Image 1 (cartoon, rainbow, N blue to C red):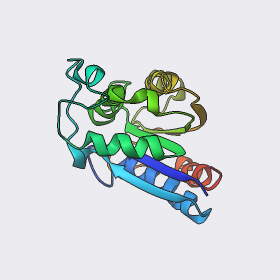
Image 2: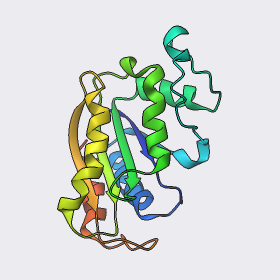
Image 3: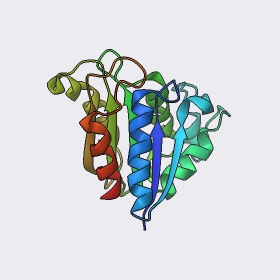
Length: 178
């Protein structure tokens, strides 16, 4: 049994990336894994200030907004799932703030199995690589991280457009096969 932590970076519940997260979670739970989904928007994580306070204070951030709890969960998890809608071929501000704020303790986030989930209006998979590279850049900084899969939820503009798409089944199967 693996401890799986899903970070949904959508600003809206029930959005396309959130629905894909739900499918991943359902598959992982069916396989017997412990899964927690965190809707990042609910935690109001502020952007990193770049002040360096954490570097001189043993990983403690000067901002007090719940990121400390997120870091603890990330350190303890076996699997990290990062999910985001695609905004201008990058990730949402919510998931980017989460990734940036790990700077306080990112060296403790080690040996993670990584999965990425994106939802985009553009149906062209080749255009999604810019967004996935953002996730890969983050994972590159985490010692021992290994990418295991990507769910490309493309061609979904309006809330719920992803329902019935092949990416929904793909997300479920990926979660099931963690």
